[in-house]
Image 1 (cartoon, helix red, strand yellow):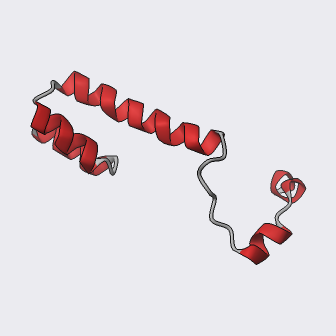
Image 2: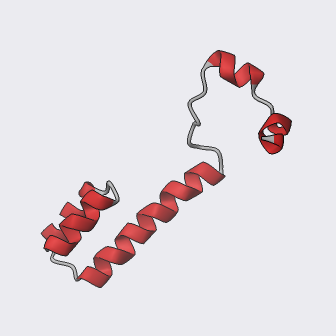
Length: 70
């Protein structure tokens, strides 16, 4: 249980860790849950459903060309 709780703190997934501990899952099953949550987070970034939080001014002046050149 300490390993799962520590991983939850490390990866900022305390909710996933607590649920895994409450359900009595193995460390391997908890690891699979952490990976699934990471994949879910990454997918939201890839498909654009997670905002990047630019201010109005920043979003108007944003340029992919400037980003690539930087």
